[in-house]
Length: 264
Image (tube, rainbow, N blue to C red; front, side):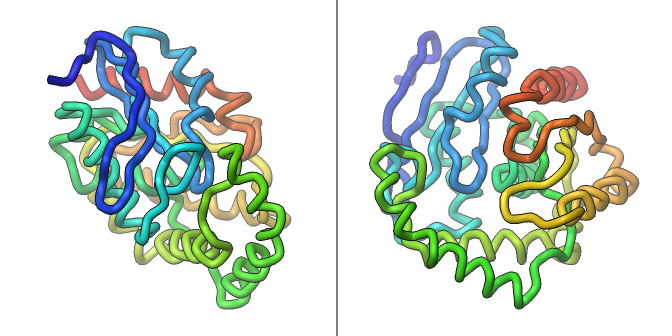
């Protein structure tokens, strides 16, 4: 029997691996947090602290991320979406409010669009913005960059700061989300979301972006909102993509509260 009255931390088996999961327990609404592509569950600590103990918080490290989650033969986006259900099922959760940052926002949007009866709502933190930013030249650049970084990445694996994935695997994950971000791919996903959802958008650049490229991507969001009455822009904050969970955690927490209220 799964205890929901106290904090639990352990491994959840899924497919050929196991994920490191932390569940705060409690009787409040359940919030599951989805990390950036190579980030870890610790990124959410300020948001969780701001929301407090009135919520049940579930965080986890994706495959080969963090110190404990195991390696896998499957690092696909579809595996990431399936893992949301695997974690919720393992912890005995019927419904959850999903919060995702960056790559995690894409996973959150797909998961919410597919599970209108299981999703309480969604908060999308500077991600899941339909835009055709990936070019053939950029694909090659991504592969080259990860190849060059491999000698830096490998020694950091033991700290959990970098994933236990090859340079090729990391590059392909990055390229896959670029393909999924294309308007013809992501637009219909956003249109199918039927639960209260809020964007929290950052400002300026992100790692690897150039000039005003990131702002052009964010400029796609008003069209999403215009088409789907269930989705709104909660806030556009001053912090950058990489700093938003550290500097504007209060805006993210407020978006969670708002979505939960709208879902009642």
